[in-house]
Each structure stands twice: as structure tokens, then as C-alpha cells.
Image (cartoon, rainbow, N blue to C red; front, side, top):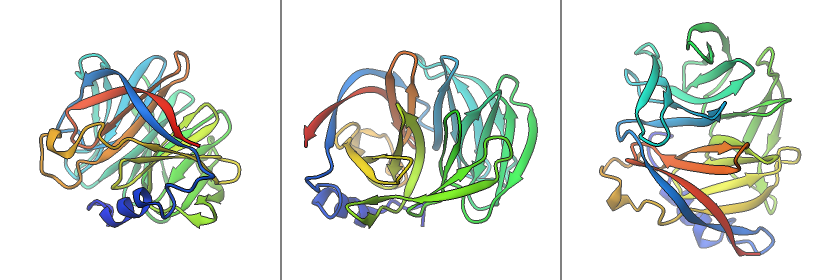
Length: 258
């Protein structure tokens, strides 16, 4: 179940089943800046467009698309989804923002400036995370597969299977394109996978253990896990947060294992 953290997966990754394979580099982090984050935001998607921070949130009756002031965490603009929808990942596509839902098999297309609904599209299975580049939209569904969508029609073109040392990596959640690599939160863990979008191979692990320990998250909710990756490609800044976290972090990666 997506709504409960996968502690068995976390243990497997961090104990070495896939995560500590010597052939795959491991990266730690240095915190460069810390910013406020809405502790009521069940973060599903996070990205930067035109220098501004956007976020999509989940939970039925609480799902929304937001434009957020990075430095203060204040919500500057908000579009609420109908109560029947459990909002999921989001990504910019041209002058629009695409937003998934979890189990409703429908995604929404909003105007990036006004948040006006411009259209919708359908897909089979669950919707989890989204990312995009100049050619493709990338969609996760909780499995080891990433769907490649046409940015104009949002129809599925093909899929890539994500593996580390030949083993499938499941529970891939929020996605972000970072300098040609696809970053993916591994649901229920403090781990981000760095994925080659052409082959699906994991080319690096990011271990964010200790970034915000559970005791400092301000809630006992088991779903208050790491989730949300945003990259400012103009200034080369990487931001991460979590569901229901009171903080958002700018981090710099440091390789700790080759």
C-alpha cells in the first residue's frame, strides 16, 4: 500500500541488498539552506518553473496545486482538486502543469499561470510521480517501471524498467529531471535513486538519512516520509522535502562511496 511506509524496503536498500552495491556510487549531502514548509502539505510533486516553486499535494479533500514562496513557505496561489481526487505528482509541460491522481485513472492539465483547468487525460493503473524534459514526460506508478509519455498528447510511448545491478527497484515515487538524470524518491525510505532515463539503470544512490529525523517531523504519521525533489537548473540548486514536513532543504550532494 502506498499509504503506509515500506520499512522492509528501506531496510533492504540500506542494509545492502541493492543500495550498497560497490558498482553504484553513493552520495550523502550537505545542507546549504533550510526553509519553512507547510506541515499540512502532503507533498506529492515539487518542481521549479521560471524561478518559482510549485507543489502538488494529496489526500482526498486536501489535494491541491500550489505556487509557493520558497523563502517563507507561504502559499501564493492555490487550486484545489475536487474532494473525490487524491492528488499526486505534477510537472511543467510548456505553458501548462500536468497533475496526476492516485487511483482515479485521470490526470489534469492546468494553465501554469492562472491554474485554470485546460484539459484532462486518462491512464490505466495508479498515478504516483511526474517529471519532464524537452522531449518526454516521465510517470511512475509505484512499480519498477517508468512510463514515457508524449508531452503533447500525454499518451504512453513506451516504458523503461528501473534496475540496480539487474534487480528491479520498486516503489518509485516523486520524480525530477536533474542534469539529464531522472531522480526518484523510493517510497518509504530516505533514499533517492539516480536513474539513466535511456536504460533504466540506477547510476547512483542518494542517502538522505538524518536530513530530518522522524522525531523532528512534528507528527507521528507514518506517511510523513521523504518525498519531493525540485531542481533549479538555472542556478544548479537541488531542493528536497517530505510529506507533512515543516522544513524544505537546499542540499548539495557529496559522494561518499564509489
